[in-house]
Image (tube, rainbow, N blue to C red; front, side, top):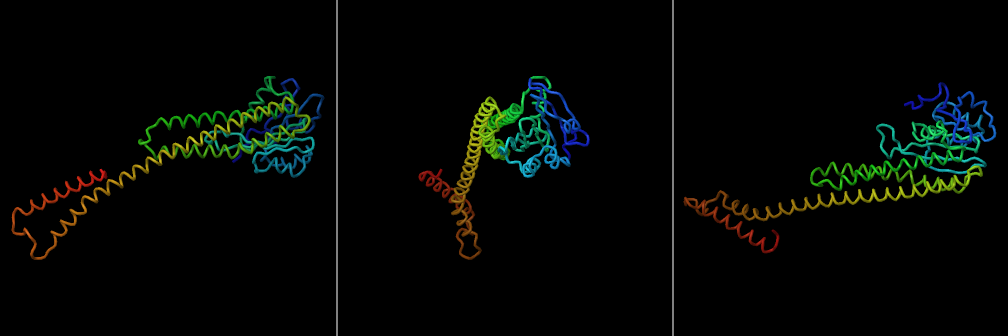
Length: 331
């Protein structure tokens, strides 16, 4: 499936802006990128589709990125991580997939490379976060430099987690208010889906927490002090979200345990009642089986009232058994 139909024709470029250092920027095409030379205070931000042909080679030949790093930036190994390479910052981040038909645990990766003068972000599938930051730049109220863009991207990606977490909590609240006897199978399916979402978010957001800490701690000098502070705030927010995910997961587990406990109690009750019924009818079955044997000498064969004597005896046995069960507190 080709997800790059919004790229510039024949190129991997999704969009590019030359920042003016004041919150705005001018658009630049792929040909202009090849000839671009930085002026004082300018930063070039390029957003590329990494699965387009030639991206891997272009990163090495034109940008001068080492082969292992270029391979990381264009590969499908998207576990969140971040590290410093000389004067450059390299990172892989993940955001929630809000594309139609996607589940919250279906995360989308974005690779980031910047030397402070050029910033390259790469993605495979459509990601809304870069477009949001781009809209701010086009309005003249966006980030002013490479560090601020990295900070804005990470803040936006983490902030969008909140919508998914709130949605999961709303689903849990709804399930808690439902009558568990109405449709337990459907409830179990919904709870299992919530648990999968929680585990998926946790699996990706845990490493992302570590990656953001690496950016805050080891970023190059062009990553300014205020950028580090904002990244630290993003880390705190992500930690709170991870705690919320833990709470949601535990709430789902409690609901699932309660459903299973009710189902087990219902099964035990049914088994108990079947045992009581079997206990009552076992002696009756023995008696009727004994009287039904086809041999000579059976009492009452010639007596017209024998049937009613047997019926009365069976009723008496039932009454006696019920009294015994009641005394033993089995009923």
